[in-house]
Image 1 (cartoon, one colour):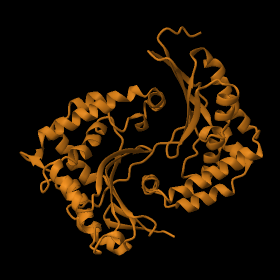
Image 2: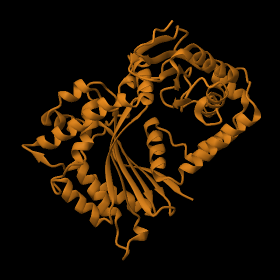
Image 3: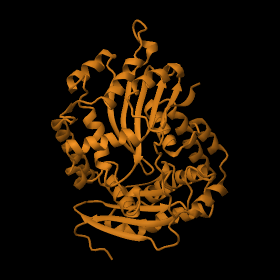
Length: 430
């Protein structure tokens, strides 16, 4: 059994330690949580990549690699994520667990120290970030932003959230936008980095065999150079209701061979903080969240209206997003059928095997997270961003008691907010 503890290392700097003997590697992450904002998102996304290029002690990739090799070939990667309306930037690292070193020498302390060094002691030139490193990583980030359009399936969902949440922080991409990234200089990036170190809530995570007290000491030492601030702020998440307005329909044409139909629903205020949350998760699983779902089995398999059809949930923002790939001329049919499947759940037209299948998939999926260090860290970061302490096991147990009536009630709260249709250039659409 793993034991999960949470402690405050410094004001607004929290450590969540999962003590377990299940893995041969230890997993560490340090994440700064800051409100998603158009003005700063690009700079925030760039910072971990530039920091990863070199520190004052290990000024380039080569010497950093050598330092990692000494730690039995550990890995530290920059990370940029979005949880609700928080942008989460930092590093994820994995190292050999101390229980498996050759002569019992500790890896945790030097690994934590290296992580702290990357975050807090960067390689600089003239008191700011190195111009070569900044330019190189800026080009990489611009490539990533421009490259998002290449995967049309992800792009359609991306456009849907942009349109649906145009006036909300959630509409901002975790990588920022081209225009703001273009303007970044080593000096402006340095200034933003200092602001982040001073104001962001810091979430530290460890999973491995070391005792919580030892982990706390190692990370306290590694992060001792963090500025002290009693006022570090946990970002909020603004949950909105559609409030009965007509759904907006946006169509765009591109050179594509397959149409992309994306539909965004507001959950009527049900988020991970509400009692109805487990029922909404089950509702989403039955609707489009699994390969046993109504969208998959009916819209895709039985009626062949879509190449793929699925739905996902944003637990903090209160959104359910449907993603599908269709023939251009099947737009009306596919849209109607997707809405019909939701209507069926609202009316309780769900077979026992559908309900139980969704339940088993969710319970099994959550418990399988306990065997995957990366997914476990991702789960706990999401909980931290939401200010929740519910464990994976507790969440899995909540799904056991959800009834069909509760699922239907959750479905009845869903309101269609936005439809986004990406069609081919030649398509006239009636």
